[in-house]
Length: 150
Image (cartoon, rainbow, N blue to C red; front, side, top):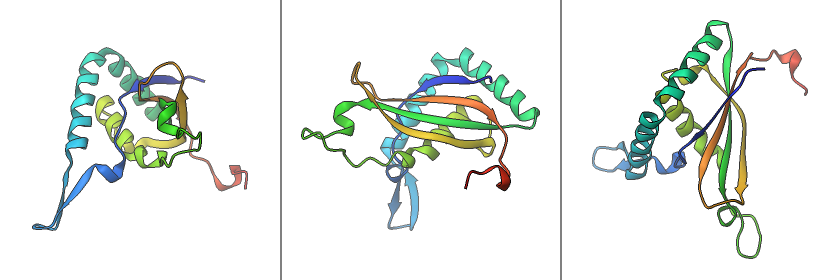
């Protein structure tokens, strides 16, 4: 089966993307979200050829009647996952799905309504202290109820 792998910038959690404006009772993007979007723009410029090829492949999958399964592996250093006493820290990986899907959709020019979520896992980076998201894209069909193992 064909699949695409891409290493992308580390996203903020959805909880840190928007702040409330008590005067207007509206919401506005935070500095953290703006910084992430700027980092993604630079990433897109540096990787435009790769992103163009990903866009073409994903468009073909959609034309063939598939969805795009997006698996996310949140790569981070050991100290981001474990305390000094080696207990697990609180870290909600699922709070980064929507931000990552939005970023990916913008970079490849494909509406994220064609995305389906694959696994979202936390992974320890024993090599260095970089934080990033390793994304795997592959064509997928939406399951029927009878195909579920429940």
